Image (cartoon, rainbow, N blue to C red):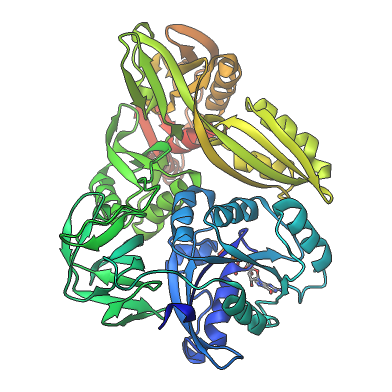
Length: 596
Ligand code: GTP
């Protein structure tokens, strides 16, 4: 296909505005997939994505389209992940295409992720075609939403296409707009091969599959290629495109998007954003390459300690396909053997945890998520802190730095006060406040540490679900942070220790010990529960001793009933963690780490 007849694009949208449905409709209406093979959400490969309706891995499809002018075009759609945790992947896949369809739900309007993603598209110099979706719904208000797109995003929305991805209205217009409004790719077939590694994933039959966008030159089967970031050389054994199922072809030329396999064993050896060329050639690397860094860490421990090896197995398998997920073994006095894992964000954490529980059937205890702190030592060195339990003694520490984010929140006026209060409570600094229609857009500078706990949940509850939220990391800043430990029966429970701001330590400590008092069952003896900073106790509760034997009320008569009660107690015990002389139920760890 000549460059002039190729169009490469992505679809940007807020979650649930209809990105996947539109992609499905484009695939279907061009007969890329026979109707009988069409299943909903063709592009969401993994079950978990389908279930939760979120797109995690970028996927791609090549569509043949004969336009109204009679010419045949090749349209390559790269489906980008919609969530902030995967912002880096979004930004890379955006650089692999020249245009974007901006999908906005015409019953809802612009939301936080719409903004985050469209700014990425603008950064990547995309031509943007605005699409007002869900016009079949009575609540659709296209004029208002078009105006909002112009106000908030600042792009011309007068020609926005009115679409119902559900019923098919406007799909033909969308295809024509892709051909006529989005630019053709540029590239030089005769130059040395230069391709961008857009994505990669592990397939149990083919090994690692690498999605590439050819910038210059031509890539053929049987050639030897090199990844610039690490200099590794591989022999290409297969080249193809997605329609959306794999179709093997002989070569890929400039402007084209497709996959290669080259007996690569691990996803870790292929880095999103890397530059690919022929072995022995030197080309200039594509700009801005950086490997994705985990920003949130937490411990994952099996509830049943005999499942540790199964957990290792599950984590190994998941990591095969997810280079941004990091892990190392961790032992906790409270929780036994487990893993300290690093994630791109909270959603990423949740997805991995869910997959372990569901696909591998292992019940997990997750410790409090922690961000990566920088510890500056008295001796001038710096180290990263991934686990509050590893916090060195304060006498050797000069100061600490914590990561900050820039958060953008869109919210209906009525809830603005609550949102401002929430951000203020979380040590936020307001950067901006503007209005778009009846909605406010607030921008806050916040410590990431205050967001990883339950910020999403709180935001949702104070706004009854009407706020949308997005963030990006901005950098590190010094603050007065301390490690708070929790002691149960005078023994520190490592899994409950956390980093907190000094000014909020008392409040957090008090809340924690009060909660634990309710969560830990009474024992035969009195149990002090304390929160402490260094050696200093900042909050304390005492769980009084249990007086009655549970079986006492059976009067020794009914033996079956007595045994049943004891069995019940035993079953309850299994879900407990023995800690010193105290049994702590697993829910205690989960609930105690949530804040109100
Ligand atoms: P993620 O994959 O989670 O990012 O969401 P998405 O943006 O891909 O949205 P998706 O296509 O899954 O659509 C969200 C919901 O809106 C689904 O229940 C769709 O059936 C529905 N939907 C999508 N397009 C339309 C439309 O044009 N009209 C109506 N009535 N519903 C639609």
